Length: 145
Image (cartoon, rainbow, N blue to C red; front, side):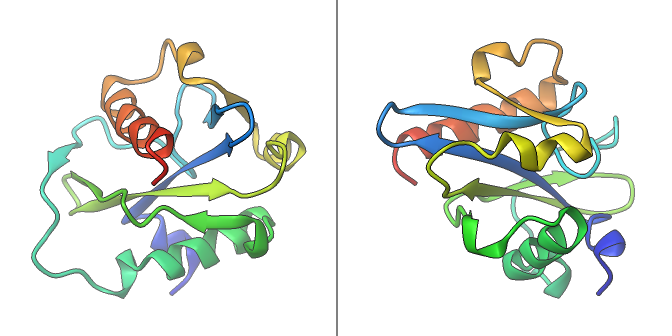
């Protein structure tokens, strides 16, 4: 499945957690924390569907992210404990949390795509739906998930 089509049904939150200092930062693109595009305005939280297909598969989404953005798959890990879904007019959208495992947050990797790393305290102006997702991601990262 082409990465453009994959991202019709998936969005990604990228983060970095420094286990030494316990500093967590999240990728931000303009006012959105979701790659490659923000959620549709009509999106709302939903329970995970009973059945999912290949288009929502975590490995497929991670492969699409590395292909589209040039990130090394050896420095990214999927946070399996993050199971968030949004309903949209075109169908369910799965939100994935990918974590960089590098010693330092790879700021230079985000720059070509207009992204910057920011702590959650600097996410003012982010849409409320995304802030709610970010809070759940932050809780998971801080709990060691």
